[in-house]
Length: 402
Image 1 (spheres, rainbow, N blue to C red):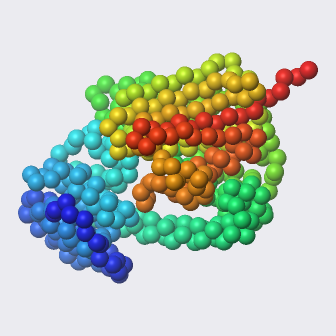
Image 2: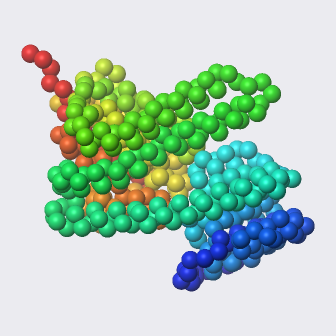
Image 3: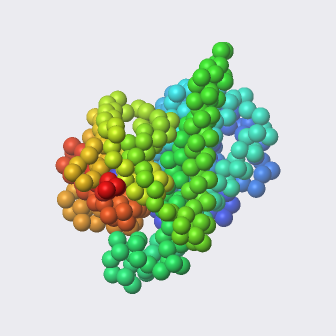
């Protein structure tokens, strides 16, 4: 394939699940064709990764299964290109070659759904393909539901006039829909933490002498993250029936940040940042609000900084807390791409995002702004294109008792 920019043909959704297998060994592909001969799938095989990518560019597939080590192209590189063409395509590695570190990173970032070792078991491979097809259908259905939800929220935005006011002052029934969107967005960090901890635990167990301390740390992270998921999902029901569920309490902001960063250590993208500076002030005065809300604020801003540095050569992040006269400040500096001036006005609007399709929903910063302002705080951004951005959240301290 050449590097020229091409217009993609219009997509007509396949009625029969289409599977694409890529392997430089023609004998392997012949064996796969025999195994899937009587299955209700349309199977295509390629020994040349470039030919496979040309085919995927012109016609989408439900599942792509590739060897990892091929002469002309690494399997992970092929899957990265396939993801650019269609993010719904489920990607599987079928290989005897195992670069454990690269595979772990690819699985944790969602590039690879499953890794199957050669020589493979035919029953296992067929089961993995069927599960992948089911996942493809779930992704398509999720995209449809999110589109409906976006349309619903845009109609509500027109009724109230301003998107920021809608997040805080809409009716109870509309609040349920908006809050559910934020719940989906804020589940990403704990779910990624669980996945990363499980992967590290598996590697520790595969070692000749399992590291029990590392396993214990992984289990602690999994249990804490599972608790966060349970609390987050449970809060949807509680939110609609009991206004006291979000009764404010006194919270130490530095402790919230430490708790959040403990989970991010299992995020491969965060762990790979070479320059990380964390300056958290001790003995800060408390701020008043819901602990889960403050976690959402911290998680969203840290995740936003990680995403901003995805394609930059230098990766540096500074996370800090400190006190000002009557407020406590949480700030995140990144060396990312920065934000263009014309985007600043809409930066905190719902569904506005500068990230590529599939990388962002536009709910993160809108959610942060809504939560911060609901507690009487402020959020600000300083940014320079090509140099990075600094997001600062200022929250009022709890007044001292007289």
